Length: 155
Image (cartoon, rainbow, N blue to C red):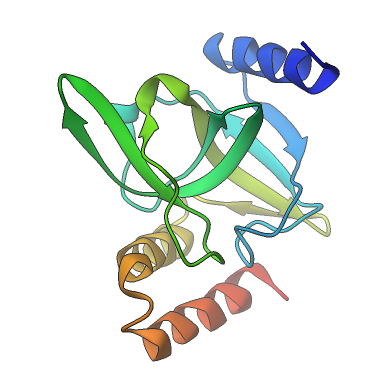
């Protein structure tokens, strides 16, 4: 197991113990909500407690990924999450709930804390999640949602 794998396992253990975990985000798949360099706070969460639009941390192969949950479903007795990065066109492969590590509770950017449970952030999260699968058909709406997100989360 490489260093990143050890860090992932330690993070998973901390979250499972009910401790919040903080880390610096990398990549741009969740821009403008989560940007490279943002500090992300993750808390423990069970799949059944997640809501449409929640930003979740899950394990995908050797990576820990932060993406938005569009919805969840049960097949063959197992729960799956359908997730997608906000700035990528296609959803991820279905994520077994057993790979869920936690839910993003807050983001810190330039010394400002953004609580994802706040009413404005929650409303915007739901809009983005609902518009996401239809973004090719609703580009003007998707642009307005993106612009609103930039206004809420800063440029």
